[in-house]
Length: 231
Image (cartoon, rainbow, N blue to C red):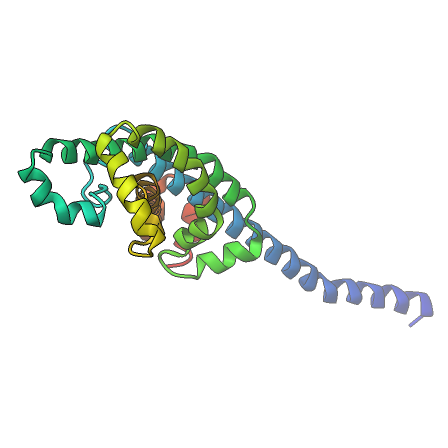
């Protein structure tokens, strides 16, 4: 065999031997992109659905799973307050607290979407294999502090209209200084803000579980492909 022919054969064999390696890397990269894209689509879908369900009249008030009840101290004092003719004030406060949460929740969507956009491929893979509420836990970690800041003034603007809320805040302010109540119950607005966040993440968890259980039902091909592969 001539030297030139041998060199051509060797070059051809080299190309054949490395081709599978290049292809494997390409497929791996595509898999990463699909996992990330599918998860981001699912997160945006779940977050948007949760916000839509809660950020509407009755979203909290008419849903027993997330309805915001009176703070513990007021609930315990309800019989006495009803006896003194304040039963209607209590009912009005419950309504105003839930209306406040319903008004605040739409503010969550931009922050939830930003959290999705900031997600890395590594985050995506960890969430995909992290259990039924891993998405919810991700959102809580990334957004709860910022959402509390956004929710609080909206909630306060509504609950301040209740005279009973103002009286509660006055009493709890003193109790809080003596460490008799937790910080999240030291004012009505803090209490409602925390319950609103809890309700939001609970609904996101519901949406996440539904997507995992029936990815085909989402109508999204990429969600179907990624979450269907997890079954």
